[in-house]
Each structure stands twice: as structure tokens, then as C-alpha cells.
Length: 108
Image (cartoon, rainbow, N blue to C red; front, side, top):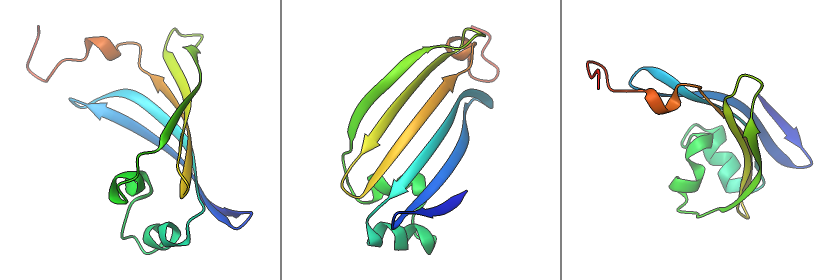
């Protein structure tokens, strides 16, 4: 979902992260882009919103907001990645079996 907010461009995203064909984490994020060049890069499709930090060689600050467990026992964390150009507010929820995921065909 994409919207404009106070002269910035805002994207709301929900991404399932997988390894060995298994979901290990769901990340919900609000990405606010203030830099016009970054907005142009994303808008024209040259760079994905999730790749901006790496593409621009920006090392963002990291701020852990909170962490805990869901009612089901899954681990979660909320954090912010921030630079002058953009800000990402992220909540990740990790699957209960995240530490037992093994490569396909590997029963160890």
C-alpha cells in the first residue's frame, strides 16, 4: 500500500521470509521516504523499497523498540531503521519452529 503523508511517500508492507521453503518470519513494516531521489528510484521501479539502504550504501541507525512473545509463544520484535533519506518501522514475528527448520532432505 502506497500513500503520501506530509510531503513524504509511505509504503506499508507485509512480507513472509522463508528458508528451505518454510516461513520463518513475517515482517510488517511502514517505510517512510523523505528524499526525492529515493522516491523517484522506487517510483520508477529502479530500486525496490526494501533495497534502498543497500543500493544507496547507507548504514541506518537501529533502535529496538520492544520485544516479547505472542500468546502462541512466537518471538516478536519491533525496531526502527533510520537514515536522513528514509525510516523503516518494522515488526517481525518469528515462527514457533524457527530453530528447527532444516534443509530439504536433511533429517538431522
